[in-house]
Image 1 (cartoon, rainbow, N blue to C red):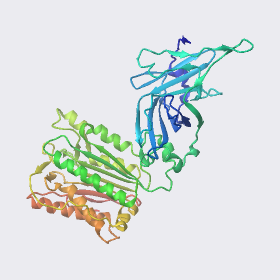
Image 2 (cartoon, rainbow, N blue to C red; image 1 turned 90 degrees about the vertical axis):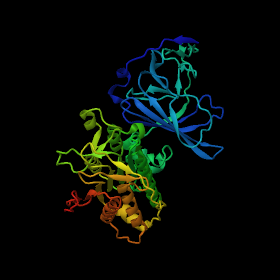
Image 3 (cartoon, helix red, strand yellow; image 1 turned 180 degrees about the horizontal axis):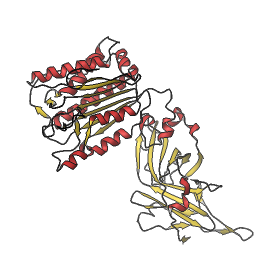
Image 4 (cartoon, rainbow, N blue to C red; image 1 turned 135 degrees about the vertical axis):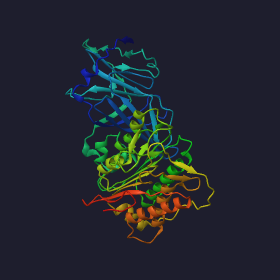
Length: 486
């Protein structure tokens, strides 16, 4: 064998006119160094920005359960990184090929069948030269580990042989792809996609070809999305905030489980706690018209003293004290902005909760040290009541822990007074036999419970809220200054 000099063309020559735009292929694949010679079924998504991903699945003969791999794929012509490599090779005889490899994968489900080597894929232009498609064979040879160095872009070209007439005859070897076919949108059904995705991914994960996945959601159960944003970094409040976050996620996961709903949870805390990630989390959910979206914030909050337009608090999405006014503005989001953004996504039921102070900038939420003995056990859920509240209600609700100028309190025993009051009011409602229970009943119970709890600790805390009907274009019911108005 003699090495062939490889030409690395620019991406524009090979991928002109977005030939990869939402192309989807079904394929079968065998890893060359797999002693079991397992055949994996796969689905490959390629995008217009030269990114892609591959799902491979097979049955583990030992566990009798499927294993599901997710590989990231680069379709750029000149990427050479530690985990991924891709580039073009061309000559006058064999034409143009795109080679891509990846060591970057996760196991989405099941247990790995055998140690797999790196993923290697080959692409070639189709017969009409309109797009590139997977290739079953290649005139080039790569060995695992050959391309480990960033500057080593050589691949061995297989020698050609003369045929009986003396003409050059190209030699090929298998690529690992044993079959493939291009898929169209009509190919996607719920049953089909379950082969390559976990159940929750079918309902929410926007990075996995949102258009195709959303297209198969007709006649499915509503999805319950929860975005939980928790301040875990400020010593003065982190204990109660962390407890709030755990209680909220536990509560709504139980509701989803009881109703048999797909449940999607996104937690923003630790090093991810910032305004950019909060906005991204909201942007990256794609609720359907019958879905449920819950947003809960537990942390510091404040109001601008001269801002009479915003009666709901700003979420302080940073740790400690911001170094300047610019940082404070940039790393804060008014909870009403979150509410309006989520409401505009069109879900049937939206619940936006903020357990934070609504005081003027410098005053911050604090904790009370106490030793109250209280029952923290899970309450039974009456499915009929839960169906009424979560499956039939059409509402968008924004509820904040304190009116403008007030602190939101928390204690060692009760955690955030507002969050605890809300969860216990909702929990008691779900225990009842009242199938006519309405969300406004829960809001009013939360209002009274929060005020009562604060009074016991010799403080005042009045929740504020806005409750809107997502079906009828009627005025929202509001309580902004502890005086209900319609």
